[in-house]
Length: 88
Image (cartoon, rainbow, N blue to C red):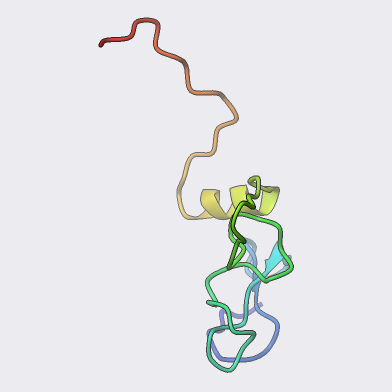
């Protein structure tokens, strides 16, 4: 794959130089599908979906976690420990 920010085509998120498509991207606000190109495509039910309706929510998917890891976030499945003492 080649890094390409031109309008058109079938953009997708990849972490291996374009060899594997993890999730399609939206194609852009102008001359694309109408959604910001930095989001996953409109069919995705991920946190990176370009919109969410009132009262609707999505859970983090494997694609979301891979994207967060790719930008440097440390993704951990461990729960945040509860404090043992509360200060009022």
